[in-house]
Image (cartoon, rainbow, N blue to C red; front, side, top):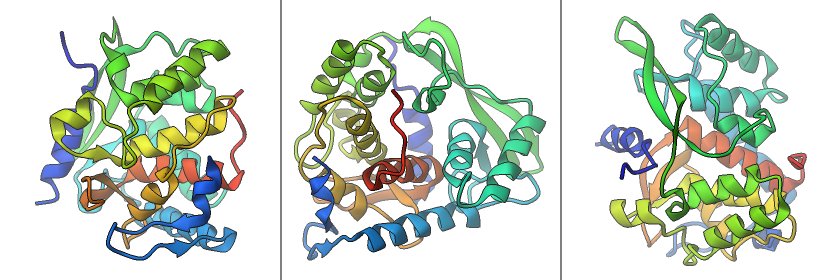
Length: 277
């Protein structure tokens, strides 16, 4: 059986490159650092810095953001698609620049991540995907993710798929069941699924997906400590780090996809994000 989480390959490449809402009352740092109180003003600064991180990455020649600072790979989906979404109100010119570039490259559809914004008519069942090159520009490569026709097998063993399913399900009962299964993977530090066991580290973006799911799934509650953990993983640059270990130590680099999802999640905490349903 092929593992459904094919993007592990992409995340491994990034790692190599490095060589209820009540929980939001504290800004958790590393486990050995004191927590700081969070106010609406401080959360606003967190989000402002995060959006600034994205804007500063813009490559004006391509009109796209690289995967992380110094990277030569530019992902249309999901990175630049998500970045355009979270910058549309705060930095409309940058968002428009990204959208114009994706249109120029002829890549305006993925078939998966769009479900976060209600843009897919049939988000389920999950399907396998392929990472492909769009074109090369000197030493830079524009890439994207394309959904295939074959269904994903064994996705219930992965927290991210379960959380996304809880967002995609139109049936409230099915959405709750997916949320409940994902919640059981929470160990107080992160989500322990098959990918976590294999890599022996937690994934930051799953924290963001959980916040989004808790915002959208009726009666869902944010696991205790989750918001603090997500806030603690923001890099001084403003972006969010890919992974972390059980002690809260950051692993990897601040990148566009994780940062964009974290912005979406914290916008939900602030009440600035409209429910999907």
